[in-house]
Structure formats: C-alpha cells, structure tokens
Length: 132
Image 1 (cartoon, rainbow, N blue to C red):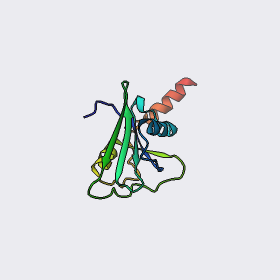
Image 2: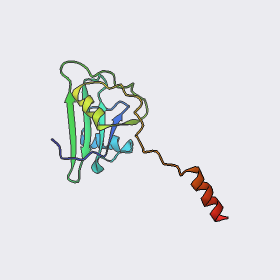
Image 3: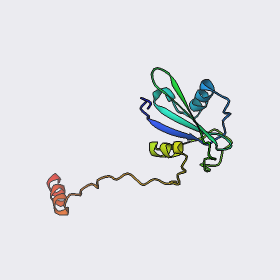
Image 4: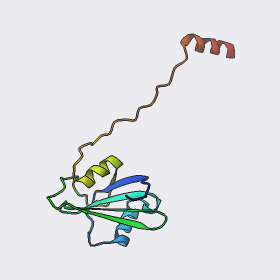
C-alpha cells in the first residue's frame, strides 16, 4: 500500500508514448495542469488498452505505477483526443480501472446540501416594519 494522499485523480484522454518513464510522464502530467508532487495522480491508458500507468508523488519522490492486463484488454474508457486533455475522476473510479472494470458514470449525482430554512413571512414583514 502506498502512503500517498491523493488530492485529485486525472484520466489522460490523449495518447502517450509508453516508452517514456518518470521525466516524460511527469512532463505530460504538468502539461495537463496536475502536480504529482502535491498529491495529484495522473492515469495514462496505452493505445491498445492493455496497460495503465499512473504517476503520483510525495515530498520524497515519484511513484510510477504500471498495470498490465494479461487476460485481455481494458474496455474502451474513452476515445483518444488529439490534443492533451484530462478528465478528473474519483478514487472509486480509479479503483475500478485498476481492477480492469469499466465504469459508465458520465454524470455524477450532485452533492446533497441541507436546504436553507426561510424565515416565516410574518416575521419578515415585522422586521421590515421595524426598519422603517
């Protein structure tokens, strides 16, 4: 288990040369606006969907995590874009991808917030009358 606190997780939507190592993938991550040294994790998918690579860091250094799917391919996560682009995903979706599952959540549920309580109408009218 890695002792890294993930702040954000990005899924790269463009093709990346998998011969690149730490410096090359770090440059790709920085190009996407992520900072692996600050807890951002960037996940790259190989062109033929048989491998995943994630780069994440901490104050000491970088981790390059590689996952190869021996039994087949990862289901199509997304079509590759020409320009560098990334989508932010949750840590649960990251876990699904590392297990080889595909997720189909395209729209997340909105976070629940407690509705504001409105003051009774008579109290509001009384306050308005007092201020006059």
